[in-house]
Image (cartoon, rainbow, N blue to C red; front, side):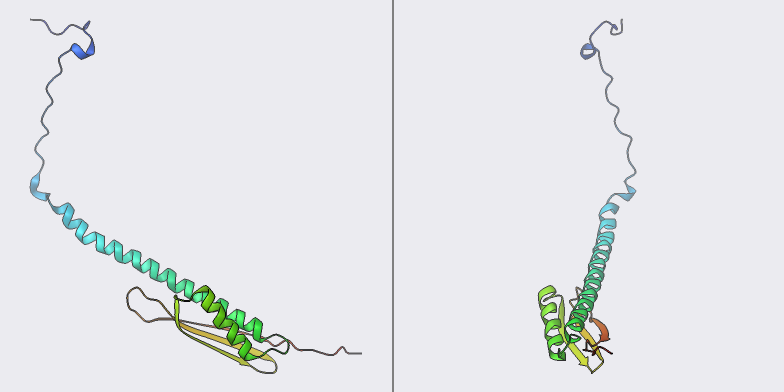
Length: 148
């Protein structure tokens, strides 16, 4: 009996039969599904927390920008507190009409200074009560006669 000769082409040589895989330990079958059922909600909750933090962070910056816009308007020469409040509300409506709810804008103007306070609730994914409050203050522009 002769073995297949090396001169035969590779496709003509006999192949050894494939060995069957050794039996796997079947004691942990089904644990992959159980692990996924436990891990997936935790990962999803982490994702929602990240999105909620981003919404809160953005809402805070929008409220701060609205307060600064109101300060610029109300601090102008011969301007009024009502003009600053109107500009803050317009800014909030244009930039984040649905992100910030229950918007409350107060502008306090005296002869020498302006203080603006913007408060609002941030939309929540979990039903929590999240609010932002930002304040901006500055001097009022006024005419000073030149000294001689």
